[in-house]
Length: 174
Image 1 (tube, rainbow, N blue to C red):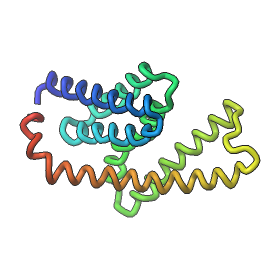
Image 2 (cartoon, rainbow, N blue to C red):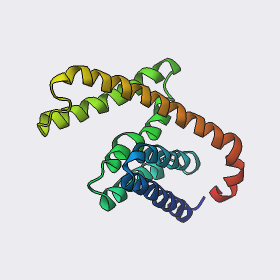
Image 3 (cartoon, helix red, strand yellow):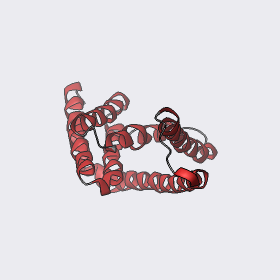
Image 4 (cartoon, helix red, strand yellow):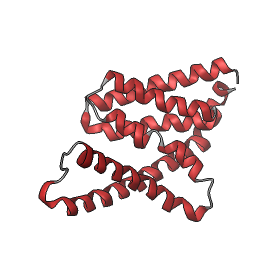
């Protein structure tokens, strides 16, 4: 595939991702869903075009959304978790299979720890008040379960794409 075609497809995926994320920014109830669906575009670029473009699509989608909706947390959710994770998932799954699950959980728990550290330590805003430790435990457990579901969602969508749709889109990625 020619470089210009790779750039054009990457730009279209970035624009589509920014539109999806805009819906999440406007309708804040679906912000996590919008991030999850937009992250599938990163997976598509990784599978069909390759590594440098994957990183660019992830970063430019987050930056475009941040420029359009700076007050919404949707761009940060995508930048730090949803957009980067499909790229990291590809690298994690090159490790021995027994290490996949612990490394994935280490990623989400490190992100949560940094988030809590930034909000409480740097900004000085208590997240949960007097029941802080119990609620932090609930947050960690809930986030881990949601992250496992998200990981399974990405895996399922990759399988659906490979077995049902890849042959239909093959001519676009030549």
